Length: 415
Image (cartoon, rainbow, N blue to C red; front, side, top):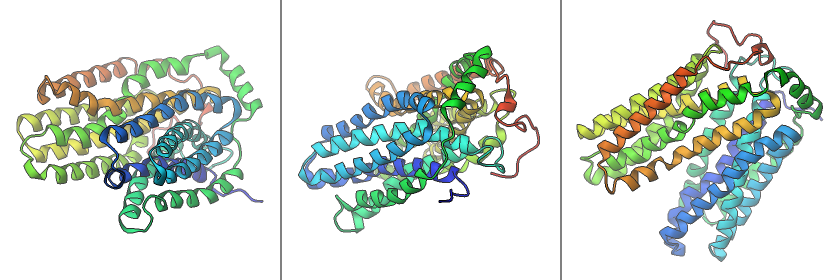
């Protein structure tokens, strides 16, 4: 049986389908509240248990894939995502199946983001892809992850609103789409064999820990702003910008569309900004986020909803730049035997940024919105400073290990 011509695509599609399965639940929250009488506390708990599965899977799944291979972990994660959809079909019997399903969905998402992101990177280089350019793996994984996070709520919401059996059909569609994907994934090559991993460990011994040092000093300070920027763009801005009145709901919808749209559209540029000589991609992304936060502060002080939407676009762009830039830094610096682990750590820190709206809402009980945003500006400036100070430290010692053309200064024309 022949293998797919572009093996990276089915591997990246696993990120889309698992993200779809995890986020379709969000668009069904209103239905569960209305038709089952679930309280706000109960629904919030369902969102929280997702994180309880996500974070351990991110931290452990990548490390496990470094030892056993990407393929096995990814196939298991897609299967677990399907099982989560089966469980959540049981909402007709009460809330318990939803809790079980959400826990499994979080675990599946963490495993996929850690293992499949690494798999896509490795399948986007020789000998599996001879035409891709440096950075293609990071951009491909990031784009298809974002696609899943967007398609899940949209598809789930449309099916729940217009199709029969709203408690079952959205999950059934997800399961049916995953079945052929599993068949294709089983035909893909494993990129990290035990011999390859052992050879990489031996080769990496003279410079042991360089990738992790660069991660701590350069990637980690910027990582929380990946999602902190996005959530500020579509959740915080509609809550803190004055003068919206009855139009706040429509404004919030526009902020979501602008933030997420800019985050996706900007990602091809991130690879072009990136360079192997310093952390320019992360510096650019963090700088754009800093500008966006300053614009939010101005929008509050000037009571300007229009400026708030400009800030949403800026923050979304910064989020997209940081997502791709962080993955590029990790995939360039990490040895194969630690790529999955560092990818998991990166996503864990990035997801910490989702707490930004909650922290803002909590502090708003005692502190004005302008002062809170001023504090965020200072924190972001500190992150930017730390990345800048360490930008040229602990650079990869063997860039040709990743791609001999990685140091080219010519602009790339292929994606």
